[in-house]
Image (cartoon, rainbow, N blue to C red):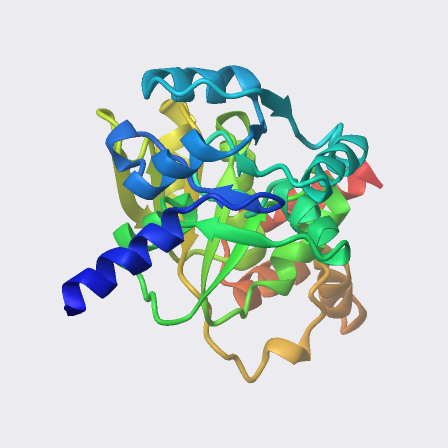
Length: 295
């Protein structure tokens, strides 16, 4: 009897309801990771909203699913979000998918979920793969407490301030990064957050999966000669509380100037600031030059 109830409950969960937005997780690599429930929902909805209709179209065709596709991405999310909401309010059902992983995590799907919440449109999730959590599990770092930081801004000032603010974050940190930005990001993490353990994950669940467990300084050295390929998830070891953390400014220029004001020459001031931050003097000097040139 209990088994029958369990089956009935699953059948109810798999039922596609009109006027509902379904957040459907898709594989991050291996197509076998697409769940049975995801297939049923994708087959049952009226239309599919996708970050890239070409990629999602290939995925659907792989499983012999034919559904109308509506593009929904960063540069059309405002007007397309209203369009999708109108169709949902009219009683249609929609599955939102991203290129890979769970929709609404570090992508425009969060705006559509917010819009549906404002309009009292039901939203439910068909959970599955998530690159951030998968990488965390593979990292061999502390997983009990973590913070997801997504992509780091490319604005140099905002980037510097954000990384400096994370220097003493005790939780394990998860970042996403594109291959052409990886070298700069690793260098910036080393400059602003100091050397620490890091795990770099790429091509997860695919044939060429690569998990590199190392330190930030060694990762910087590795990618001086190794060409970054594929999208990366960086899992970075958390920092430790430091009683002296508030005794110097987080801004590098202000930190060096503090020692200059105390009577040290510029190079000695840079050396002292580098020691405080746990980085090599040469790294801090190069970073200081970059900041001065930007200014």
